[in-house]
Each structure stands twice: as structure tokens, then as C-alpha cells.
Length: 102
Image (cartoon, rainbow, N blue to C red; front, side, top):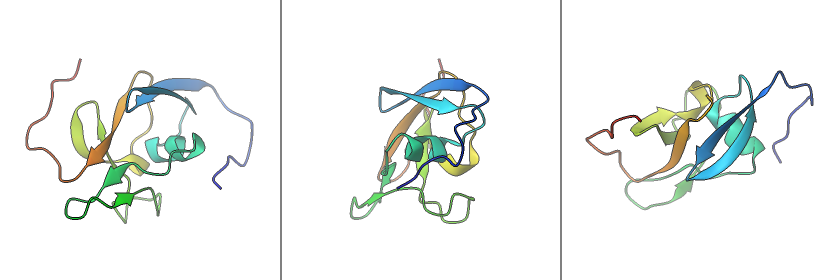
């Protein structure tokens, strides 16, 4: 089970994952915030649709790919969560177009 080493947070931010509000600590990566919220799956594979989730948490494995504010193929472990950020499960292969950010 994933849990924080310390309760000492320097503040909180709220973002959404698949439309669900998630509270994270300031400075968390998207992948760490999802794991802390109990979310283990953030993408599915393009060929078989197998669920995948954060693994290395340092940008090497690409298992934490998510859609952030309309842009696919973002490595959740390398992106710091921001207030109001819209994160979505990446299903299969990335899309070729990007939605305009609002």
C-alpha cells in the first residue's frame, strides 16, 4: 500500500482525475497524488487494453502515461500537480490531436 512518510504537508491543491476531485499535497507529482488517493490504474495498453499504473516514479518506465489538460502521453511521475488540473486515464494509443486548454 502506498502512503505518505509524513503528515507534514505544505499545502493542498485540488485537481480532477476522470472528473473526480482529488486533493493532493503541493509539490506532489500527478502519479504520486493518484497513488496516495488509492488510484492504481492510469492507462490501458494500446494493443490488449491491459490496465497499467505508476511503477518506477522517476520517468524511466512510461507506465504512468496520462492525459493532462487535453494532452496525451504525459508522464504523470514527471508532472507536478497544479490547482484545477484535469487529468484523465489514457486509454490505448494517444490521439493525434489535442483539445484546446480551457
